[in-house]
Image (cartoon, rainbow, N blue to C red; front, side, top):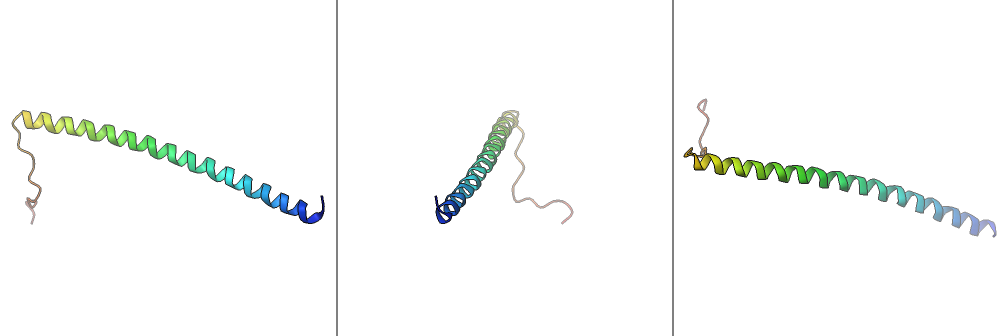
Amino acid sequence: MNDTTSSRLEALEMKTAYLEATTAELSSALYEHERRLAALEALVREMAVKVKELARAGLEPLPQDERPPHY
């Protein structure tokens, strides 16, 4: 191989290594986001069950537009 081909091959190898590292980093971030999303979805389901339980117990939900007493 001549110097031009060798330098081009080295540049391609460096780009490939960078892309592999970036792919691994993005994969890790995606996994973490999926894990957090699953936890939040479970929390929302739990809260929905609690709201239904309160409604069955006869408790009125809090009004959305009510001003706090200090206004």
